[in-house]
Length: 77
Image (tube, rainbow, N blue to C red; front, side, top):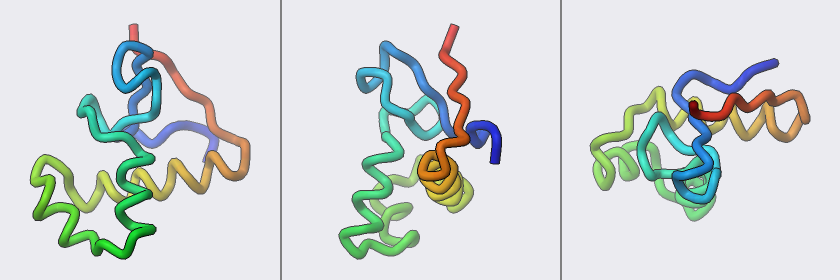
């Protein structure tokens, strides 16, 4: 993967520039932390109905690409 998944945005004025899901204030790190803590996708979506299964998949794709050091982050205008 050579680019940020479309559902992931980076805005230096939101969450101190951390990658977030769409333009929400929910960071990729939040989602990864919930998954690492054992929450299921269904539990996360029930707690945060503004998220979709595609959003969670985008967070995983973002993390995988980031780990491969192939990620290009466009900044918000």
